[in-house]
Length: 379
Image (cartoon, rainbow, N blue to C red):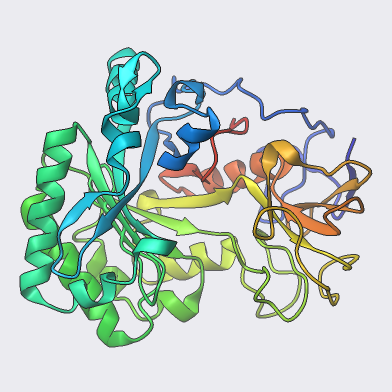
């Protein structure tokens, strides 16, 4: 059982400094959520390499998932969009179907509300995005090519995601640019949205963007104009700290622990302050933790990172022999000890708080679950 510190838990719904219900953490993410409220969208990324681990599309819990971002397609220097692993995507036997895409098409028939979105880019395949966005010809080719792949494969949209100086995300027919690094790239981002919208008209396709939850990136985009193209904006409110950081820190805190620290709430408030509609904002929640070996808490020095590339999946947390703690002031779960050192993540309690925060703020989607094949209970 987790320990807690921070404000005394108020009743739900709550004010701007939320607390929690009595402590409870399931050994695995709960599957009790329902999609009966179709105004709420809960989205996950499904990386195609998961199929090689036996984590097929059918293993996802569609009682609490409305949108799946299928990751990742790649983009060429001329703007062409293509599948990254044709064998996994469209050839290997999966769940009694042909390829992961075949499995997802069956799942879409079973779950009429389910949207499948092609995510283009990702960390290892995003190096061409800034170049593609800078040219009218390549922007147009991106839009044409993405629509062709979407229609041929049965997707409901495109999610372009690149992790260099920018990331695009075309979901349900979405475009998501992670971080334009200057105003010129921000203008290119808007031009790309306009080009994609020409090929993915709003009467049929949903256009969204995934952006980092930091003013350092968001300030380069005219978000007020972006609302003319976007149906949804996915705020990636995680990875605030990691192996690149000088000190250990909470990687997905909802509220800042100290002045000027990044947080999900600060990003939401900034986006709303630009005139972007709250109803179009999705709040990103990670289902993995970040490890800081040798650290006993945030703000402490660390000697390295445990897990796979410094991360542990939600189902692996808390670590054996580690004490789990929930900080209700910043809204962050973490464990200390075991083979992970200080590991920062979200658990059932923090996700519940974030879901209520999103509801209180009038966000269009309560949570946006990033990565992995597991989902937490959302109420």
